[in-house]
Image: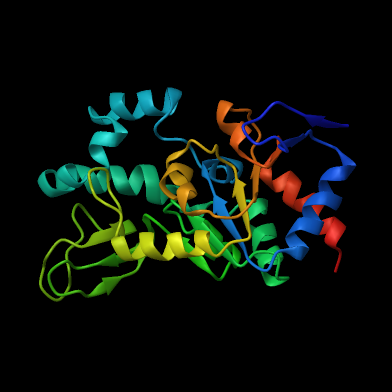
Length: 266
């Protein structure tokens, strides 16, 4: 059954989990689209088994363990003034999770990109999951943990160099502390990266939002650049901002993408 709800957009359609119409309608829209941009949100990270460090019990545990909140420790000011504690937190609470492979949703997203249904993918997450799953045209607004550099001489280092270091990782050339090329709290996103993302949004006929709400930081930062009329939201939880989408699918992202892949066939 298709449930038509009262929305800001009069033609907004909410498709409930398990509806056959989902695959037919969504696949037709994606096939007809000359350019589809995907916004990959926090929900896909959770589906991959990565923890939410800022919410609930885990956030409390971090503050009890280190004496600071996650927001305090993962900030530019903390990196500048307490590098030993910063890298202890960074290695134990962030890099330790990289043993987990990207979730099924990311591999399905890569397959659908390969088949021409998606043209670009934008994310704020720093674990490099889309690229590790095989996605090609990815914009990482906040960078990723695999890209590290010396701020003084520019020498680059792999993630393993920081992971395996003791205390503060130092540049082998000039002994300056190496830093991850990620956006810390208190820092602005690189203007060049924002410009690229805005351009991808502007040229999209279809904007597919996966695993987040339209009021999230990811969407609120970019949604105004979208000029099309096919904004599709896939998110397990309902939200008051759902009404601004054209089609809303309340379902896990990996489940929906798997159904879409099966409908598409080989």
